[in-house]
Image (cartoon, rainbow, N blue to C red; front, side, top):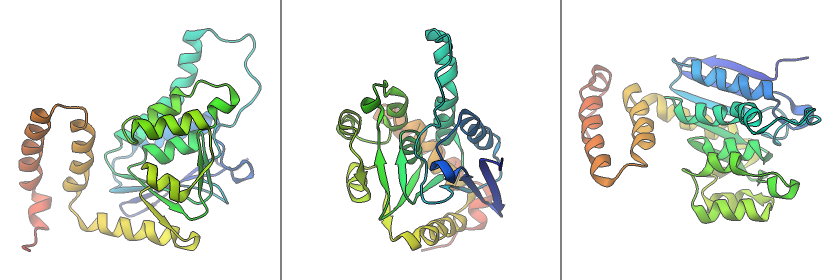
Length: 245
């Protein structure tokens, strides 16, 4: 069996590819664990591109028969922690994570599209939170969206279980940009080229501030901005690359 999560390094760009195209890159537990391992261990990349092999990004979780006997609540919580860990690893990655959505992004795939820092979708991309349609409590996928989408957008996706296209995903805040199918990779490369021109402390500082300040009160957020601004702007890396306007 081929490796189901591939990584490739191109200088300061890290490519991560979900590699199970025969099932639409539906993620097994092992794939979710591997994705978390890669992101938690990464220290060199300035930007990370997350994509799926084949026609789809990720069609959800690769489901098997339910365990017997059925686990109790604590056991289920431990079992599901691998998914929460994967979402958390995307959030906590110092480098921005760019998700490329070329086809279906369902369930776990839709969650990864949401939690990524920037999401670029093909015109052919579709998105769905199908849990309600399968009588599954959807709080796992909701947790990936709670700091990314508006509450109304989340409730709409969850309660309707509708499959939506790229344009509607853009309007809901799930997607940042829509491009033609053959322009998906070049759009990612252009974004990475822009990030590589910026100083490393500034790139990482933007994500750090976005994550830490979002839930803070305004006074704390402003105070943190002042401190981080002073720290990053006096870094040797940024000063070496400073250009006067």
